[in-house]
Length: 137
Length: 295
Image (cartoon, rainbow over all chains, first blue to last red; front, side, top):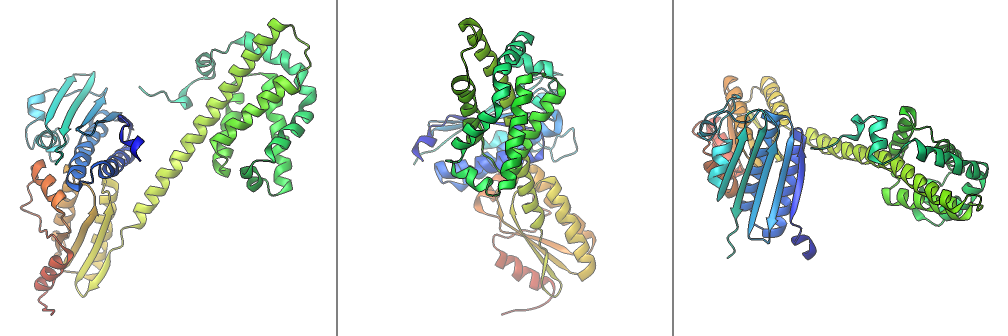
């Protein structure tokens, strides 16, 4: 529906893996219906999965916002009030993980998007904002 | 921050609705007019309700109808008694639960509350209050009604959400059908999303099937999986490694162009994983491994 294309943003509460799964599935099908591009949908859904899983892993709960900006870009904001990241430079390196996982989430997300911004304060939380520009052919 | 209404105390809920003891006094005062007329209310209300198709389905049985009617009268009696305590809140939660269970929709519930409000304030009102008192009574009535509606709607929507997530879980649990497609070859098509719980299920199922069948090759087809992020990749590695320990080679088939691209972008090291684009390629490899030629 055309009216739906203008809906600017969606918000997801992230409390557990079920919520992550829901956000990933919904955003995947939303992007498919907007752009009909499986590559784009997979990339964005993967970013959402990485960012939301980080919330569950490190902060237990938080929020995820997805803004569809007039079909030119997709912005994702992941926000939590968790423990924060002690060393951002380290967290952005490949294969670094303080939880024994692969340690490719954040650097991988950064490689897939066009803008990447991270703010974190110890014991106050983390906010990650990424943006992907859409190539309209 | 999200507010979880379940964790709020009755006093907090009252504050949220700007309800205080003076409002409750007004509700009780108005109640002295209404309470003797609740039977009359029920007649008017059920005249309205009879028009709604949804109610005709729900109340096809006269016994059910009678019970609903008497519970409804009890509900308004407790409303006009206006003793708002934990027990009062609990009763409203119960109503939300019942509505969710019988599938009475929120729009119908809102419409029914609105009609009740109109019956109480227009049809059954006898003009026995001073106009100033009347308007503060109406305001108190509205606030308490909204208080009730908040609790009912919160319970209702929470239960419906729980039901949806249970359904999707049940669907996922049903979908680990590991099949033996040939002597020594097991196969599992995975559809949807792999999370850690499901990866664990897959691992347990496949390992026990390898134990039973002494299979030498396991093909996992992920063409129906939308997203392979680093956590999923980690799960796939673990599954591959563990089957390897039991002497069974894992082949992952159905890697779509989109997934191949994201895996490379994520920087996942895929040296240890044996993967193919199509199920057919994986099957050919499997036959090679078990030393069979199929033409």
